[in-house]
View 1 (cartoon, rainbow, N blue to C red):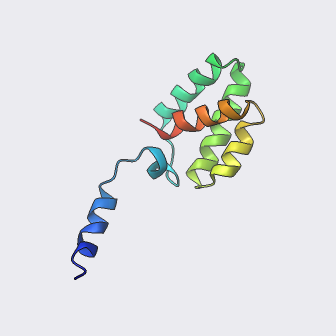
View 2: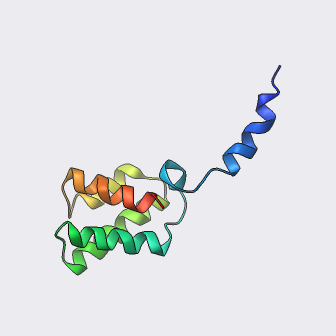
View 3: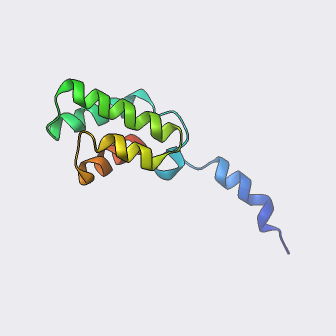
Length: 91
């Protein structure tokens, strides 16, 4: 009756580490670099871009998306903060 419960942990363990599965895990450096370049395209200078990327990535690694959004919104508008988080969380 509950045969499906046995397979579930294996499926979760093999899930890719992007999207929502990337939250709560360290953000790789190549994603931070992509996010930095993305911030530069959105009009931030070098210092602001690194503060936005590093602060947002740190909060996403702690699985705190609302705090990550708040840090990103110090430098970007709402849409820009979503774009930054998307770049940090996707491959």
